[in-house]
Image 1 (cartoon, helix red, strand yellow):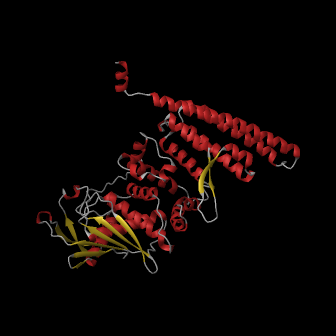
Image 2 (tube, one colour):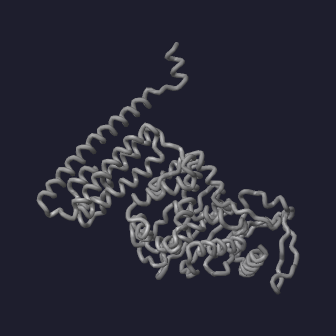
Image 3 (tube, rainbow, N blue to C red):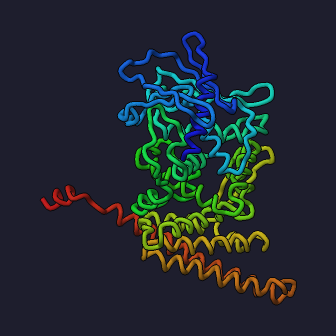
Length: 462
């Protein structure tokens, strides 16, 4: 803690020394030189002017500010350029440690503290391409919550890292990565890693939040799927929905960092982003030793949530959601290339089409992934849906077992005939299961449609 205070104070002294009034504007530069913050000079309120003391510090001296104990209680402090650039360097240092990177910044970040903006206004990040590199302008309200500021700075830092080798369009940073890394830094580092104005450190005991708060919150709801984390609905991402997204994003980042090469893989993801229009392709390339498809990621994420919360604390999906999840699992996602010069179009094929028409090298891995996904799906299914899940899984397991036994002698005409009979028989069983699935989903939809509110029941009785 003493080392941290010394470091922050030294950086603050450097920032204050470099702050120069420019007309009616105060400008401060960070110790690393990457950040510049500017704000309009304002008159200090004499009633809230802090008293300073000259004290020895690390072989030199500094002015330590003794602020009012009540001053640090504001949830939206008014930021000073010198304090802001120190916080920027601190956040960058912690982020680089988590990604296993050294400080090799190229893009300069110019921060404008705009007093005309409301504290509820979302900070704006502008990426500007220069002759040889990207630079960034960040416009934020003069009063802004620490959590909002931290998230914004993490966003621009990830963008700067990703764009270092980019000469075309700027990279697209996934929202889950921004929210997840921000929450991770706040949960696993000292609360003083952001130097807020008018705050004091009281005592020497600091408890890190870790994952305990999100375990408690997630136990009362349903974790988001990986697909929901990938493509959130911005219009619905407010209030409790935003907190749920942030919790799941933090858990996702934490679990990814648990891989032995987790730091290197996240850094590789940022490095790959400028080269792909779809960030999911960059993700699969970065985590290639662990995931071969997005289905693998979804399966791993579901098991990670179960392990984190415990099987008894995982809430089952609603009957309607169970039907949709099972349908999505047995429908195989593919990408169709209509013409060479157009992006692929997503589509769905049935298991029967995979079994009857695909080559073995493509067929077997897909079916194996579906089997594993059905196993993970079962843990969250309502009781009435579990038998149907088991039937799908059992049918595919029997087919793969018999299919593998024939694979070595496929050139024998008699074996080829038996394989065709096996494929036909399996497809017929899957047809019957698909009919059961459709009937059960229709039954659930009808039951949901006839449910009435208590007011409607009273009116019907009258």
